[in-house]
Length: 234
Image (tube, rainbow, N blue to C red; front, top):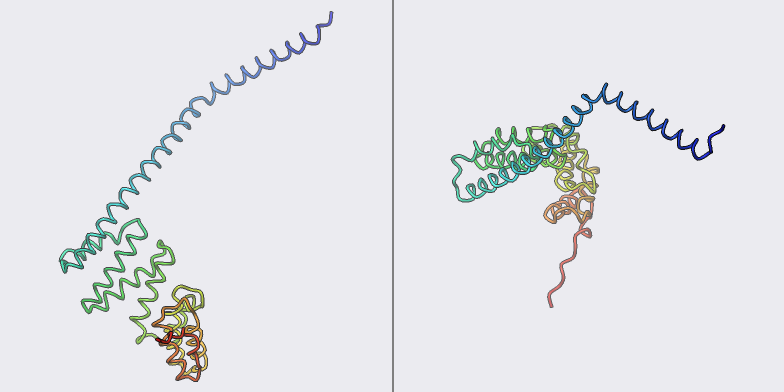
């Protein structure tokens, strides 16, 4: 006698559930230990990452305080231990702390008329591929300014080429040095044109724009209209 349709469906569901239960039990028996180990490793990794992040945040805060203390000591002319402390911070994993320490160390070297050490520090900053490009660009500008008189014009132009473009934050400084290098090459037309572009860029500091207007004028380029007019006093 045939089973009613609803009884048949119930029987099939029970068989299917028993089959899946047997499959799960067999799977857990075979792989259960590895699954447990995997869960433990996953939780350990999450916990380790959270601990590392907290430790990094704490370390960054402590190093920022150390850097602030160094700046205070420099302002108060208490510099006996500053170089050693800066050297330690220059090895920091934090980008801002490391870059600030190197830049400060280089500035102190210049203050002490030690150009060789300053150049070495700026080169260290420029070549540090672990730092964001914005910090390395600062190093490139400072390094080129110090080495300008000893570099060949083409070396200056090649080094500053990525920065000597309108719209770049360092266009003023990089463009000015590039134009001066062009003058050394005898390329007065190109130099005058670049000085004119610098003078017309509102993002360039006013002091650099003013110099650009003056030099451009000596090269036959009238860039005076690029500077804002000074309002007349009544």
